[in-house]
Image 1: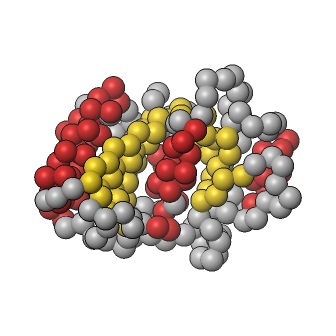
Image 2: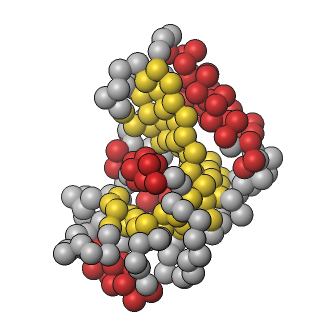
Length: 208
């Protein structure tokens, strides 16, 4: 699916951004992310969503802590502190290529598959390219093994050059083969990286 914004948003608005409670200004963004163990409360989050005009409000759970999941939050993603920027990059649907991409409606549908989500990733550097893609795909599938019953997964492919259809099909078929549920939704996107001879896969899947 090619990228397109919801009609209520302008194309020049940043897609995804991370916000802190102590920011002087909450600039507009389509997908608003915040770290859940920062000093947020319900009123502050409602103000954040209103001031940014957010289509989606996403909490990033970077440590084990108790946080009341409010109805205003569209999704909670578990990740390590050093993976926050990787999660934001995956949710940045504007960065997706026109060959294979997602839009904000797809991200919303993903978050409708559950309440809690997990982020995983795998990457490698080397040649030849297709052999590297097979290795990284195998590593990602190993990380996704416990997600075989998930109802939804978003997979982002990242490479220096545009991926051939053969490579895209290999990744998507591997993920589809892992999932046991016929009704599981799979969303895939592809974006570029400046890292030479590097291929990476990132994924967010519904834990429940």
